[in-house]
Amino acid sequence: MDAPELEAYLPLSEASMIHVGDGVNDVFVLSPTQGDSRAEPQDDRDADRLVAKFGTYSEPGHLRSGVAAYQLLAKFTDLPVPGVVALDEGDDQTLPFVVMEYRPGTALAGGFPDIERATNPGAVRLLGAVMVAFGSIPAHATDGYGYIERTDYRDGSPVAVGEYDDCTTWLVDYGTELYEAAAEHEQLDPLVPDVFDYLQASRDRLSESPSPSILVTDFSPANLMSRDGTPPESAAGLTGVIDLERAKIGPLEFAAVNAEYLLTRYVDDPEPVREALYDPLPFGPAIPRRDFYRVLAMGRSVAALPFWYDPESELYEKRARVIASELVRIVR
Image (cartoon, rainbow, N blue to C red):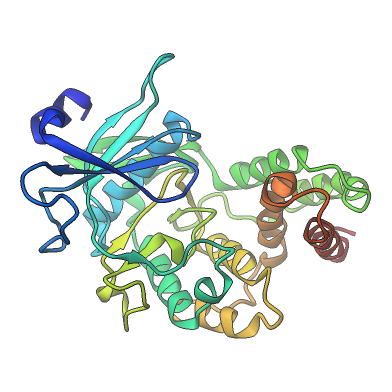
């Protein structure tokens, strides 16, 4: 669905726009001008409100992959994902954007730096439960692995199409690309060639066609919403599962290890977080290929060090040293 169809759904000339959020992309709530546009929605779907997300920094493909993930999850799970109203991939003059149903409530955390809320065991346990739902999509609803490139329809049902035919090639290529972009650091630089060797040597230990799962590599309690921003007792109490741009198809085990790494980076005792995350999952943290998945998870940090942290800060040095220490343990 593109912008003209959006105009038919909610005429923009009759809508007010309120800028919300503080993420990398610009997000607006679109509301009819009649009445108080800031009033609280009266039900979970609130058909009179929409959310427009513009790809200020995200590329069209990033938004498209999120749309595919929403469509699959809406079809095959009970998760409260927003329905997609419009997707416009933009051009040289205009930004891409996606328009979705409004989901009421407040995020369970403000992102990974919101350490107290992001590592709250109740919120993390819900994250694990949602990831279980991500892994429940049937195999016939996916075709391939890696970044979701598009949605096909077969017998009227959505099929998410990944960029790779087999998972092994995607995982190795994914890790290789991350470490090719590694930030320069005296402790990391000499390890990068060893990482490349380790990734290639791991090929024979990986499955080419594991059970598929929706995978979002920056997934956290910030992607989950409840009415008041506190963790409900179960996933049934969530009011939204949002921000699924850059969605991929991959093994649930990688999704779990990746989330574990991201959530425990800044805590002194990772065990409560780890225990909560794996509690609803069908496996524990001691899974086969755990070290391989850890290397992939750390790869995003290695590539993003100068973007996530001030290169002159002690935190930058600390994160680089910690990552280098674990890489030495795994790849040497």
